[in-house]
Amino acid sequence: MPLSVIIPVYNEVESLSQLYTSIIEALNERTFEIIFVNDGSIDGSDAFLNELADSDQRIKVIHFVRNYGQTAALSAGIKLASHETLITMDADGQNDPSDIPMLLEKLKDADVVCGWRKNRKDTFLTRTLPSKIANWLISKLSKVHLHDYGCTLRAYKRPYIQDIPLYGEMHRFIPIYVTWAGAKVVETPVKHHPRRKGVSKYGLWRIPKVLLDLTTLKFLRDFFVTPIYFFGLVGVSFSLIGLIVGCVDVALWLDGRHIELAAALAVLAPIMIILGVVEITLGIIAEVLIRMHHEHQNKAPYRIGETKNLKAD
Image 1 (spheres, rainbow, N blue to C red):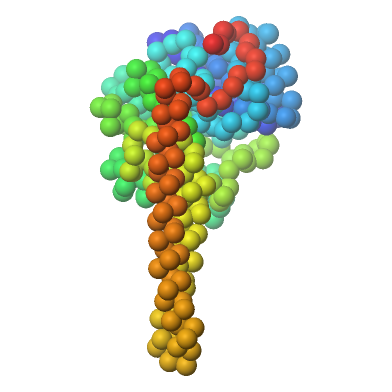
Image 2 (cartoon, rainbow, N blue to C red):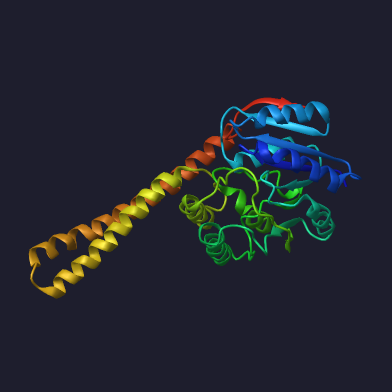
């Protein structure tokens, strides 16, 4: 079973040497290629990856001209992979390559195998707890029940993933799309190591993006792009302000001493809420338009500057 291992890289030069060694040890008796997608790194990762590719022809490198994000990096790796079996994983050393043979074994009876970081080694309040809440919410809304939508360590049969358009932060929702396409998805616990080198690129600031992408996923299903981030955040902000104003208005009416102010707020609150709904609606319309733009022009949401050991259109 020849396989392609796809690894997005953004400023992880300190982890790459050990990661490469661990993958070689885990897959030494298999036919494979490793596709590193350098997502605009500025810490020397690009030079290290070029040296690695020069020393080992199984290493393929894609260099983006700037940082486009993990979803775009995975999309490029999937598109340019040579084999029908695909493995995706992070470059920070927290995923364990020794789990890959186990994923491949389970892939014999499934179409997609998702890793589950059952004993996650991240900060609880800023990483683990928000992830648990997001996983629960995504499972409820999508009806595809997984414990860990954020784990990049996964195994895929290529026919189920190659035609899925990936934009924005949509990579985490791939299991939902392949399930809707009729694929059999299974989940299995995998090892998870604490980060020993480098700095995490994730934080609480990603939560609004995930929630807005989930909104897009729920109502549009096929349309994956990013304008909803802007319109959605503005819309949610307007709506929250409207709700707060409404609560203050009710309190003022009950108090009875500021009738004029209460009357003014009674007009302002619904206006803010309506503006919020309008902004979110504009975001959904923009999602459709950008999707049509990408698909009709066959235009990828990234630009490759250079490759090593492979040819890219």
